[in-house]
Length: 182
Picture 1 (cartoon, helix red, strand yellow):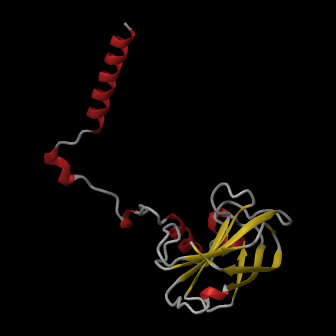
Picture 2 (tube, helix red, strand yellow):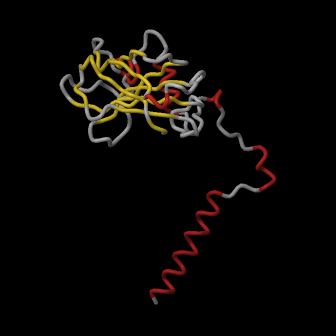
Picture 3 (cartoon, helix red, strand yellow):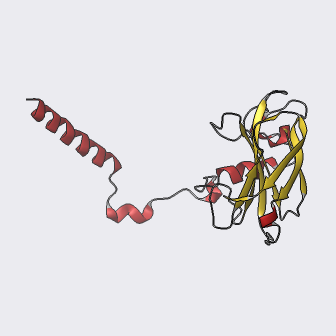
């Protein structure tokens, strides 16, 4: 009896689902897919879109409207093995992550064609969510040199580095060495 009930349930479920998603082949060419002009995001471009919005003057990303607040600033350099490589045309991303490493990035900034060593600063204008983390809390900071300018895609040649451990929000002497393949 259970087998018959399950079989009937499965058949009805499949028929209903197929009917709901069915498009006759004759109408397939008339389906309008979202485009970049309609505001739809391309896969893997969400972070790039957020960073582009951050560069618009007069707007605080993520809805933060409080007074400017420095999250972290410091210096980024290349490790000894990478100093001889040519990173012309690469994009440098500096990204702050929660201390536990779980969840989306807290803040990010982008620097095109960086020259090393380079100073960086993440502040409330770089926040990707609603508010910057509280002063005195801890975050992890990562620097990525990205060949294709898409931070969500790992390409051959991309390299990265990070703080050795969490840093305190408000720190102004953070040192990051880019020393490993991403």
